[in-house]
Image (tube, rainbow, N blue to C red; front, side):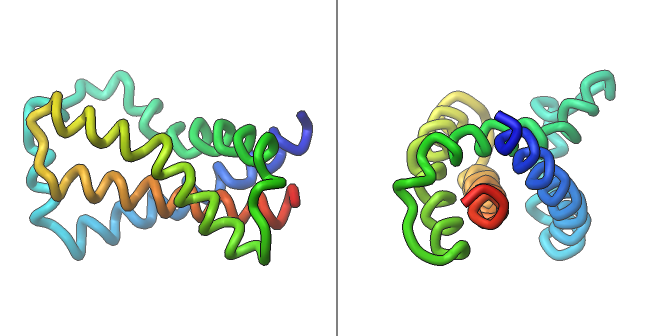
Length: 135
């Protein structure tokens, strides 16, 4: 359990920094995508903003448990294991969530694809971290 917690905490910290920095870069280089967020669906009064910032840690702890449970299935170097882990997670978890999100909410395909790619990249980075820390 300790390895799951430690690797989840480390991956969470890395994902938090990369996600927060990536958000600034994405707004700078893809401003048209972020104008889509000027939608009442995404307006918040600010009371739950902390939940957004904690996301990197929540996903990292969940992925850390998943990694610990199924790491024996991923073979090869750390980067290969991380890539495979990210793709497996994306197919079994992200794809269905993105499908239901697109079908139920008034959002664009581009927005859903950006969320999918974002989740895939997060899972790959976390997988590489887990492969190094908790082989």
